[in-house]
Image 1 (cartoon, rainbow, N blue to C red):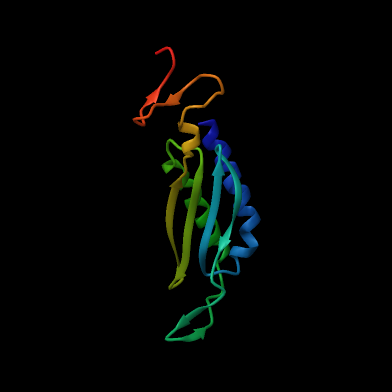
Image 2 (tube, helix red, strand yellow):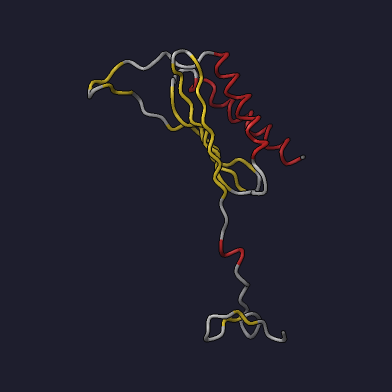
Length: 139
Protein backbone atom coordinates (compact mmCIF):
# COMPACT_ATOMS: atom_id res chain seq x y z
CA UNK A 1 0.00 0.00 0.00
CA UNK A 2 2.85 2.39 0.80
CA UNK A 3 4.32 1.78 -2.67
CA UNK A 4 0.98 2.67 -4.27
CA UNK A 5 0.75 5.86 -2.18
CA UNK A 6 4.27 6.77 -3.31
CA UNK A 7 3.38 6.12 -6.98
CA UNK A 8 0.21 8.18 -6.57
CA UNK A 9 2.24 11.14 -5.26
CA UNK A 10 4.78 10.74 -8.06
CA UNK A 11 2.05 10.56 -10.72
CA UNK A 12 0.46 13.71 -9.30
CA UNK A 13 3.87 15.43 -9.46
CA UNK A 14 4.27 14.35 -13.10
CA UNK A 15 0.82 15.70 -14.02
CA UNK A 16 1.59 18.97 -12.23
CA UNK A 17 4.73 19.32 -14.35
CA UNK A 18 2.82 18.48 -17.56
CA UNK A 19 -0.20 20.70 -16.79
CA UNK A 20 0.74 23.69 -18.98
CA UNK A 21 1.64 21.45 -21.92
CA UNK A 22 -1.66 19.52 -21.60
CA UNK A 23 -3.54 22.84 -21.65
CA UNK A 24 -2.41 23.36 -25.25
CA UNK A 25 -3.07 19.82 -26.53
CA UNK A 26 -6.24 18.12 -27.70
CA UNK A 27 -4.70 14.66 -28.13
CA UNK A 28 -1.57 12.68 -27.37
CA UNK A 29 -0.08 10.10 -25.06
CA UNK A 30 1.17 10.77 -21.54
CA UNK A 31 3.72 8.12 -20.61
CA UNK A 32 5.42 7.25 -17.34
CA UNK A 33 8.30 4.80 -17.12
CA UNK A 34 8.57 2.94 -13.83
CA UNK A 35 11.70 1.27 -12.41
CA UNK A 36 11.58 -0.32 -8.93
CA UNK A 37 8.16 1.29 -8.38
CA UNK A 38 9.62 4.77 -8.96
CA UNK A 39 8.65 6.99 -11.88
CA UNK A 40 11.73 7.92 -13.85
CA UNK A 41 11.18 9.34 -17.31
CA UNK A 42 7.76 10.78 -18.12
CA UNK A 43 6.35 13.06 -20.77
CA UNK A 44 3.92 13.51 -23.65
CA UNK A 45 4.01 12.14 -27.19
CA UNK A 46 1.83 14.00 -29.66
CA UNK A 47 1.44 14.99 -33.28
CA UNK A 48 1.71 18.75 -33.75
CA UNK A 49 -1.25 18.78 -36.16
CA UNK A 50 -3.93 16.51 -37.56
CA UNK A 51 -4.99 16.08 -41.16
CA UNK A 52 -8.24 15.43 -42.96
CA UNK A 53 -8.18 14.12 -46.54
CA UNK A 54 -4.51 15.14 -46.91
CA UNK A 55 -5.18 18.72 -45.82
CA UNK A 56 -4.09 20.00 -42.43
CA UNK A 57 -6.76 21.47 -40.23
CA UNK A 58 -6.63 23.42 -37.01
CA UNK A 59 -6.43 21.29 -33.89
CA UNK A 60 -8.82 21.90 -31.01
CA UNK A 61 -7.90 24.54 -28.45
CA UNK A 62 -6.54 22.09 -25.88
CA UNK A 63 -7.72 20.68 -22.60
CA UNK A 64 -9.71 22.77 -20.16
CA UNK A 65 -8.77 22.86 -16.48
CA UNK A 66 -11.70 20.56 -15.67
CA UNK A 67 -10.59 18.08 -18.35
CA UNK A 68 -7.01 18.14 -17.03
CA UNK A 69 -8.29 17.49 -13.49
CA UNK A 70 -10.46 14.60 -14.74
CA UNK A 71 -7.46 13.20 -16.64
CA UNK A 72 -5.29 13.31 -13.53
CA UNK A 73 -8.02 11.68 -11.40
CA UNK A 74 -8.55 8.86 -13.93
CA UNK A 75 -4.78 8.28 -14.22
CA UNK A 76 -4.42 7.97 -10.44
CA UNK A 77 -7.43 5.61 -10.29
CA UNK A 78 -5.81 3.46 -13.00
CA UNK A 79 -2.85 2.76 -10.71
CA UNK A 80 -5.06 0.30 -8.81
CA UNK A 81 -4.81 -1.97 -11.88
CA UNK A 82 -1.00 -2.13 -11.66
CA UNK A 83 -0.54 -5.45 -9.92
CA UNK A 84 2.55 -7.58 -9.38
CA UNK A 85 5.21 -5.69 -11.32
CA UNK A 86 7.82 -3.08 -10.43
CA UNK A 87 9.31 -2.21 -13.84
CA UNK A 88 7.39 -1.04 -16.89
CA UNK A 89 5.48 1.78 -18.51
CA UNK A 90 1.99 3.18 -18.36
CA UNK A 91 0.59 5.05 -21.36
CA UNK A 92 -2.44 7.29 -21.09
CA UNK A 93 -3.70 7.98 -24.62
CA UNK A 94 -6.07 10.95 -24.59
CA UNK A 95 -8.17 12.90 -27.06
CA UNK A 96 -10.78 15.60 -26.83
CA UNK A 97 -13.64 14.61 -29.14
CA UNK A 98 -16.82 16.64 -29.36
CA UNK A 99 -15.78 18.45 -26.19
CA UNK A 100 -15.36 15.27 -24.13
CA UNK A 101 -12.19 13.67 -22.82
CA UNK A 102 -11.55 10.18 -24.19
CA UNK A 103 -8.90 8.10 -22.43
CA UNK A 104 -7.30 4.72 -23.13
CA UNK A 105 -4.75 3.28 -20.70
CA UNK A 106 -2.07 0.70 -21.50
CA UNK A 107 0.12 -1.06 -18.94
CA UNK A 108 3.43 -2.61 -19.97
CA UNK A 109 5.38 -4.72 -17.49
CA UNK A 110 9.09 -5.36 -18.09
CA UNK A 111 11.26 -8.19 -16.82
CA UNK A 112 14.96 -8.86 -17.29
CA UNK A 113 16.02 -12.43 -18.08
CA UNK A 114 19.45 -11.76 -16.59
CA UNK A 115 17.78 -11.50 -13.18
CA UNK A 116 16.15 -14.91 -13.63
CA UNK A 117 19.18 -16.86 -14.85
CA UNK A 118 21.57 -18.38 -12.31
CA UNK A 119 24.64 -16.38 -11.37
CA UNK A 120 27.81 -17.91 -12.76
CA UNK A 121 30.91 -18.02 -10.59
CA UNK A 122 34.49 -18.79 -11.59
CA UNK A 123 35.67 -22.04 -10.08
CA UNK A 124 32.35 -23.69 -9.41
CA UNK A 125 28.74 -22.82 -8.88
CA UNK A 126 25.90 -23.38 -11.32
CA UNK A 127 26.64 -24.57 -14.84
CA UNK A 128 24.93 -25.87 -17.98
CA UNK A 129 25.72 -29.41 -19.11
CA UNK A 130 26.10 -30.47 -22.75
CA UNK A 131 22.40 -31.32 -23.08
CA UNK A 132 21.44 -27.73 -22.16
CA UNK A 133 20.17 -28.78 -18.76
CA UNK A 134 20.97 -26.76 -15.72
CA UNK A 135 23.15 -28.42 -13.07
CA UNK A 136 24.12 -27.25 -9.59
CA UNK A 137 27.27 -28.73 -8.08
CA UNK A 138 26.64 -30.79 -4.97
CA UNK A 139 22.98 -31.35 -5.76
